Image (cartoon, rainbow, N blue to C red):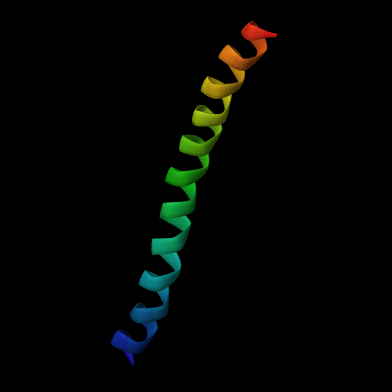
Length: 41
């Protein structure tokens, strides 16, 4: 029972952690690309 309860918990934590890491990376990349684009205009 303990292992069965721990399995879904670990699976749910993996995507949440990845989302937290990917989200800021995408935001930083978009901002970095938007700055030079705006400067060119």
